[in-house]
Amino acid sequence: MATLSLGLVAFVATFFPGGHVVASWAGALGFGTGLYSQYVSATTAQRAVNIVGLVAAFVGVALGIARGGFLP
Image (cartoon, rainbow, N blue to C red; front, top):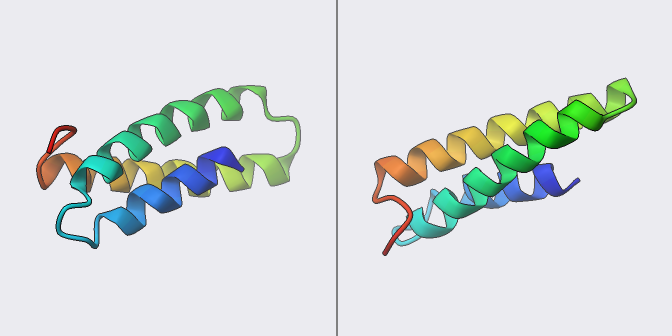
């Protein structure tokens, strides 16, 4: 669930003008968390939620870096 939450925060933050810092950090943290949780997941349902969170986190971090990066 943390991966999905961080991914959604990162994705939504890209829609705000100054949200690139939040998007970059939340996306990077969500991507790392998602990779680890994918490694230790036990069921198919957990893996499906992880993939949705990973994609959202990746898009969020990519757009955050493209729009200004990790620092204000």
